[in-house]
Length: 182
Image (tube, rainbow, N blue to C red; front, top):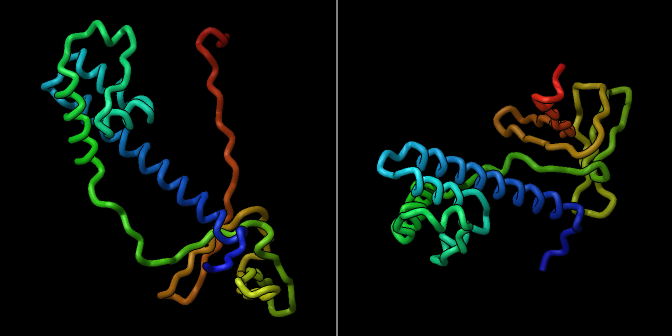
């Protein structure tokens, strides 16, 4: 088994998890759109489909051929549950499409402890740690700014260059309620 330090594989694992969550979210949004656009479903049937697509637990029950327990608001509605479950499975299968594959390994994520800056007379260099103990790769940079936090390094093999992107934390903007406005 390869002895890869956690510093290398943990960011990759986080990146994979975020990609999978994003793909499932996009898939469910496409399925919701198809349910909304379907003219053959009545309001009760659409309500059941949207309820199933609302939570991961509910849609996972449908995808594994189990019946999630309905809330009281849906238990009064008239619809063929088996038919709608099959419709949801078909819709998700169509929306999923082919599994995306990235064969070109062009980028990697490094955290703050995996790189450092070095200023010399020749210019500024980013030194990125390698798998060898206490060995670093020096990459010259054009920008004099020293970035902080995690960085994504995108390698451009065609131009023999690399682009370094800094990750920033964005704050969620809170909306004022209609009652609070003056």
